[in-house]
Length: 321
Image 1 (cartoon, one colour):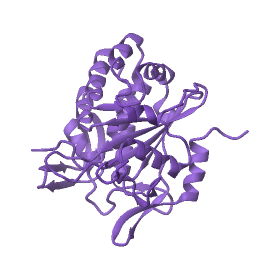
Image 2 (spheres, rainbow, N blue to C red):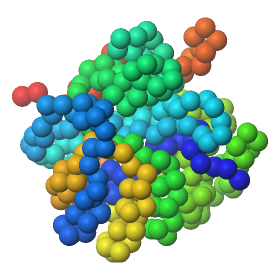
Image 3 (cartoon, one colour):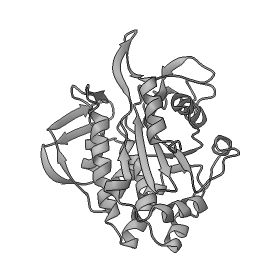
């Protein structure tokens, strides 16, 4: 059964890297050994962060990226889920916001389209990580010079390595896709999800809420809401995992599928900066202000730009004095 690189919720996959690095690590030797090979791997990675320097008393943004390319299915690659992670280096707070893949955006140098198309080099001649980052910068009106892109196969391995994640599955979930053999089959109730079941949970979107829905009070529903719920449960589990061997195994699994323009010395320092944070206090999910709608027969998520600007100001920028 083929499940590699399927169209799926990969929010939790990319946030895993941030949580592991920023919450659970405590040994310089192990960090050095694990991250010594993680360096910018291509010219595009270096160009994105050109002239960027860390200010360790400020805030930084990291864009977490995952694609929906699938083997033997010629649909091109699109960014299935994007997460903006804001690290307050001075006060040791983490904010993260999922940007729905169907968000309707103006692409720099191009017209409007869904944000998930910007990473596709077959769709745009300048498509790729660089164009995706530029588009997010234009959307949120902030610099985003760092990124982490990860394949979701790491997700299952990390969950299995830490012994599974206890979670209350809120409903029965079933879906079958004959094109790639994907099967989601979960029963309602409290349970410990292994890597495969956890992946099913964060992927499921075949209900009336679909991928993204927000009510009038700002409550989030759909696949993105489930992923945020899972990220919180995973963060709790990882924050309690202090066994260095377990951490080593989890990170080694994740890094096999990682591309980033952060170098290992930066990762080391970030690890120390955030190693003792309280997940319940210092880790906060921020809901993207937008709503699902139809545009010329296409399903999109329309950003509420004024609300987004205000949210970015209050959650991602240093308070004005």
